[in-house]
Image 1 (tube, rainbow, N blue to C red):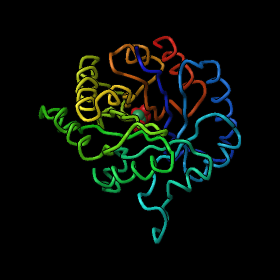
Image 2: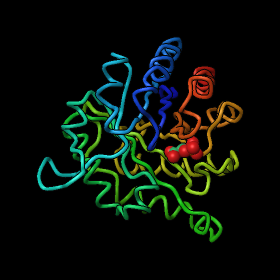
Image 3: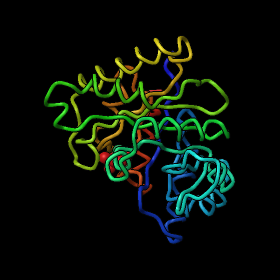
Image 4: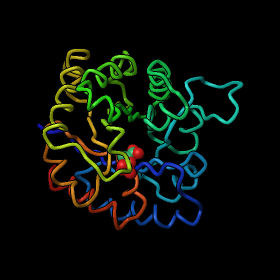
Length: 250
Ligand code: PEP
């Protein structure tokens, strides 16, 4: 039985009050596809207004601090995200792993902090072009999984994995269907080895230049249980056709 697909948008550092109307339009169109779970991960400062604007629609954060509270200037705790109305958060996005030098163990602590308060997590992994060309993509992604996936899953809050090859993010390049299939099946194998039957229930999303024109082909690949979408999630016009493609493959 295939898992219900999850299509999550990552708005990165985009979004002002004037964009709330776009979020409302996305939420309203997404309701036409109940066979797909849809979410938007918006800047932390927009979460509360977005969540109020679209009650019942999943609004998420893009990062979370691992500590409960304390002297962490500029950071946001899991409880703060929840309090603002988020129901999920991204952790370990490659832009943060690179620019903020986040390690696997930090990403794991962030995921654990989020799950512990009931926030679902989309945990990102993915290799650089250099690593893929060196033939070490699978080994690298499995090492990231090993170091960053929490020890316990299967509670009320959900853990999903997003496989996002760094070289495919925002570039318009995507791996071949065979490459995506190979990586997702390696991730699935690893999750089953580690968590048994629960590992079969973890949704594995693909991320990196997903658009209306390639979404259906990507969603047809085994063990692709959804997508994490950056640029194409910013407008209802670009995002909803991706949700519709997921519905076709549900
Ligand atoms: C992302 O940054 O998570 C992403 C997938 O971006 P894009 O869809 O723009 O490649």
